Image 1 (tube, rainbow, N blue to C red):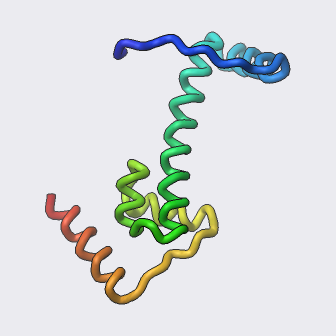
Image 2 (cartoon, rainbow, N blue to C red; image 1 turned 90 degrees about the vertical axis):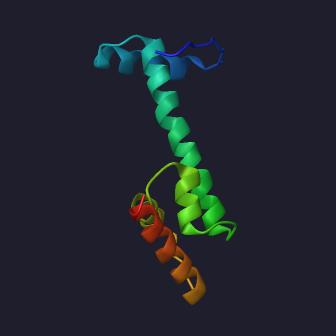
Length: 106
């Protein structure tokens, strides 16, 4: 494990109680559960930001997938899951196909 640092987070009693119950069910301590939740949650935040940038038209689907740290195909599935339409025009489609072809040749 890499060198870790300590950070402090304030949580209400109800949230702590739920975390403790879940940690007990999973047979881990609270800190382990929180590290796992933060890791999973931070990945979700990165993907969400990539999806939002794509939806606003700031980046292509290929660029958004890269920003989100996921494959192009996983990004398309994420768009579908969130109900965000895939947008394209002929120039955009050709660029996406070139990006896919280039990624396959690496």
